[in-house]
Image 1 (tube, helix red, strand yellow):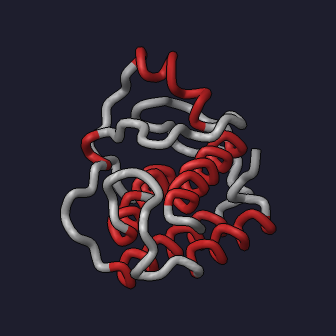
Image 2 (cartoon, rainbow, N blue to C red):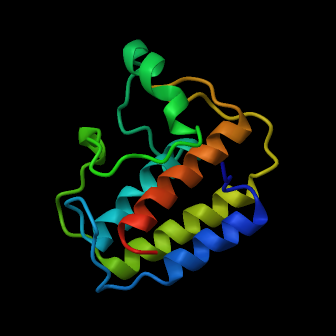
Length: 147
C-alpha cells in the first residue's frame, strides 16, 4: 500500500490533483469535482486536528471497518458516506483545490511525527496507518475523477 508520506507518492498525488480541472466529471458517485476536493479535506483536517466534525467513537464500526481504511484493498465505488462528509452544496473548484493541496503539503511536513492524536471514531493509528489511510482515500477520489 502506498503512503502519503513517501516522497514519490506525495508528489504523484499532487500531480494528479493538478491535472484535475473544473470540467472533470465523476465516473461514479454524486459529487462534482469541487465537492470532491472539499470532501477530501475532511480526513486531513481530522488528522491535523483542524476539525473534529462532531464524530464520536463507535466500537462496532471500529471493529468492522478500521483495518479496511489502510489495507491494500481499494475502496468499492459508491460506498456510503458518513452524513457529515456528504457534500450537497456547491463548492468553488479553485478554492477547494488550493485548500486540499495546502492541507496535503502541511501534512507532509509532519511525515516524521511519531504519534498522532487518536481518530475520534477509530481510535489510535500508527503513523504508517494514518499515511496509508490518507493515500487510499485520496487515490479513491482521484480515480473517481479520472486522475
